[in-house]
Structure formats: C-alpha cells, structure tokens
Image (cartoon, rainbow, N blue to C red; front, side):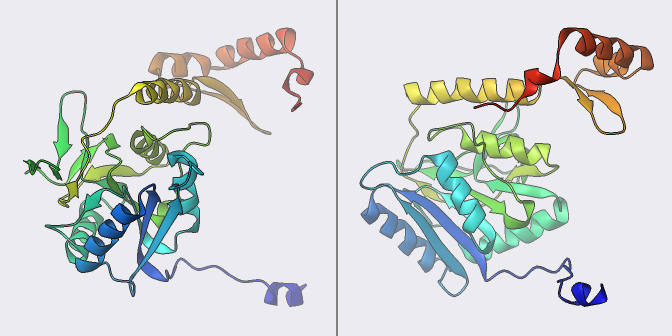
Length: 274
C-alpha cells in the first residue's frame, strides 16, 4: 500500500504561475486589437510577464462573451486574468500601477475576486474611473470602492478564485454583473480601483441588452430560490428570508415539508431523462 502512496503527489498551498498576467480579449477587428496590444506592451505588460490570449470572432461569432470568457478563465496561465474589450487603450496607467493596486487590495481585502474601473456601488451610486472617447475623464476619488457589478470594458480576475461565468446565459452583455454575483456567492468581493484607461465605446443598450438583462434576472431568481436540502444524514432549509428560515428549520416545519414530498411526489419525477 505504501508503494501506491509514493506514486501519488501531495499538493501544497504554494502555486506557481508561468505569467503574472493573462490579457484576454474577444476580437472582431484585428487592427483595433493590435492597437490595444501595443498600448499594453508600451505600458509594461510585456511578453516576458504577460500572455495575450484572444478568440477570433472576426469572420463570425464563434463564441459569445459567456462561453468565450469561460474558455479564457479555464486556460489562462496568469496569476491575474485581465478580461478586456479590444477597444481600450492604456494611457495613464500601466503594469506597475496595477501591481500597486493589487498590493493595496491584498491589504484592504484579501478576499477580493474581481477588480474593475467602473461599476455599481448600490442603486444610487456609480463608481467610474475611466476616460471616454470624447476625452471626458470620470475620476472617482474614493478608491478602492466595493461594488456589486463591474463594467465589462476591463476587469481583473484572480486565477486562484476559480471564478466562471454562467453556462445558461448567452450574449455580450451583463457578464460583469454575472461574474460579480458568482464571486459574491463563493465568498469573494468586487471593487473599482484606480486604473484609468481610454474606452472608445459609450456602450450599446440595444434590444439584445434588455433581453439578456431579463435572462439574468430569471436565472438568479431560480438560482437564489428558497429550497429544502436533503443530505444523506440531515435535512434543512435555506432562504434569504429570516422568518422562513427559522420556521422551516424547526422539527415541525421539516416534518410537514417531508409529508408534502411523501404524498405528492415520487422518485421517478426526478429521472434524468433526455
């Protein structure tokens, strides 16, 4: 038996990464992507410390944002994964500035998962630290700020957080909100940081945006639904509603719920048929 153990590999907490950063982009216009890359390299994101990964959508949509960015998150070898649009240019800040922001975040909140340059703080306040194509600079003085969503133009995801985007959503909008919701579910938090760049687009809230907004609402309505959980040795109820959680986690509440499933459902209802 000991011989088998010697053939196994014991893991340690020390993880090494071939690159410090992975810069990942969905590309529809290669010339614009080349300009983006040049701006990154000129600001310190050189090939010795960064890998550049792209998905070629220039001749047709091979991947939408959710499936494509999931591929990046799976295959990127950088310690920090930058997911950005092809129409951003680095001007004010570069690699050294981002490293300083990350070091600051490690001190302020070691459990950060996603960093951005714009996002929603709550239903009243936005945090924007970005330059638009017109040259207008949005400067947020209170940084870093914790946010509930980040804008999709540029974000940094830590590789060791093992984050991913939803499998059951499709399109090119709302994935900044999706990844922040998933990060929060896994115990990580999201922030807007002091990293200003030029974004050449003002956004496009077209019909596909509002469709995907509705799809995301419906997805999380189901994902965050209240429910009973049965394990092999215990039963309990989870809910965001305090009174419901207290009520249904009593012995009487769990007994009544069990009687419902006993008399009104059968095991064959849950067969995994195609």
